[in-house]
Image (tube, rainbow, N blue to C red; front, side, top):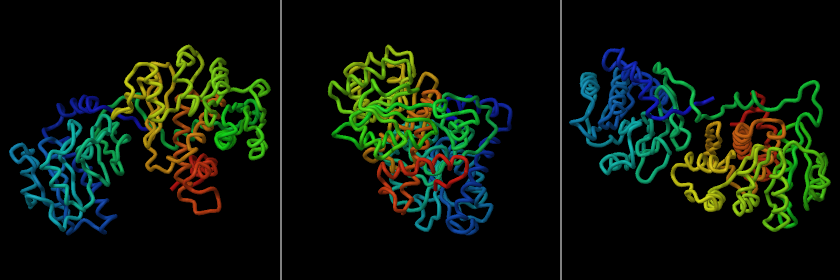
Amino acid sequence: MRHYYTAEAIRAAEAPLLASQPEGALMRRAAYGLARVIADELRGRTGGVNGRQVCAVVGSGDNGGDALWAATFLRRRGAQASAVLLNPEHTHPAALAAFRRAGGRLEQRIPAATDLVIDGVVGISGRGPLRPDAAAVFADCAAPVVAVDIPSGIDVHTGATDGPHVHAAVTVTFGGRKPVHALADCGRVELIDIGLDLAPTDVVGLEAADVAARWPVPGPRDDKYTQGVTGILSGSATYPGAAILSTGAAVAATSGMVRYAGSAAHEVVTRWPEVIATPDVESAGRVQAWVVGPGLGTDEKAAAALRFALSTDLPVIVDADALTLLATEPALVTDRRAPTVLTPHAGEYRRLAGALEIERQVGADRVAAARTLAETLGATVLLKGNVTVIASHQGTYLNPAGQSWAATAGSGDVLSGVVGSLLAAGIPAADAAAMAAFVHARAAQLAAADPGPHAAPTSAGGILVHLRTAIASLNGKGNPE
């Protein structure tokens, strides 16, 4: 499990170490770890450190000191080291003195032959885009950048960018990850342990081992009923594909039973003969959770299906068209006691937020937006995006996709089926949403890399085809790369 910490929490954890150690010791420890990561990056890119050109772009804070100390350590290992001081009179004095003693050079701009740049402009206290002088330094830089703590110009809390900022190949952070490392493009993130005593937080990210440990696996006494029966209310004569995708995802995700109820029953059972398909909810039979919304339409029949699902005491995931309907009658969720998962994209969020008279735009702070909607409705909210944010009263999950392969028509239908199957298996709502988002992103990655004779790799069908492989890869039985 990855925990994400605020800048304030990191500073508070640093305070006792700073008080108990000689001045500068903690900075040198951090810089040594930074230099080690840079050395590894240079070896991977150029074959070695000796003779390579490294340039530190240095601001006035401690991150500038980290960058100078790292350049000093690399200089002692044979690298050619230079530095651009953006605020010379406020440069960290001890770090600058050590850099000069090691033979480091001061430059006005990044030398053309530079092999790697260290971004030490701003740290976790920085706000707003790069200032013009810093932006000008990086404007003509073609070398890869290793950022200290965060790529400068990116908001540490929200990951937002509203102007010039550094594009980092690698970001090296110390003690604990910050939300920006999941919410923004920070390149590869390397965490250096500097001995901070940090308690677990309620902003976390799942790793493969976490998902594997929680994924439902049938036991020796399980049968098709005890493993969870997922009910699907999706699709229509206009959009039968949504029914096929959401139902197929539920089939692929767990070993339980899937029941479909709706006007696409014939198409569903033709594609998935293991599904019990009926034309209406009255004949659907007993289920443990409902998926409602994908391709359902927004007519009165669809509204009745939504009301039916939300009137039960079962977990429900509300997606797509059902979210549009819910915006006209949000009390259907606020009055529920059973778990409810909502999966809006930005447009669906606006409709729901407008009906609830809260801030309508998702805005730059996607974590705050998801939390506000979750708190207002008393539900779990899965806010879709390249970084999926799952918010509930239990806390917040951040799930970076790493790419945009899942941003394709019908992809959300697949996700809803996976969430529904996990709810039916008894997984708590926030965990089910986060686990489904993790596996869904992994399946999309596998689909994009597969040149085989399956559905088009970047289609929702391609994602569906690779769901089982994605789940198997959680235990090391497949390779998602």
